[in-house]
Image (cartoon, rainbow, N blue to C red):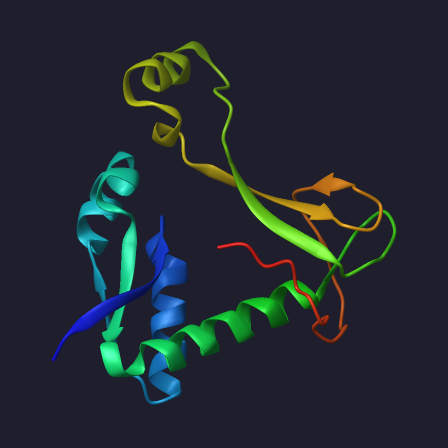
Length: 146
């Protein structure tokens, strides 16, 4: 049986949550490179992150499930400024906060520090790190970014 990656992660927690979600839907999966990335996060970019692997025959179904769940999550969040749920989720490299982190960035690149989740409201263009949880239904276009 051939396995293919359907999603990649830089942290094992969301990887396990999505793996359990697929298991609840009857799709068996496993995580490739989980231990390498967990032990040394600087390797995340070089190995392609922690990859959620599924059988090739289940890949499209698994992808659809993950997209649906992530869109529902983004759709349940609202902008703290205007209250819109028309958001775009993205990640940006963390900025070094002291000299040792600056040295690490110089030798290992931006990925040595990891990433921060940033949300952008597509209505008012506000950028923020903590959206407000609302009960809104998922929008037609979630603005989901992987």
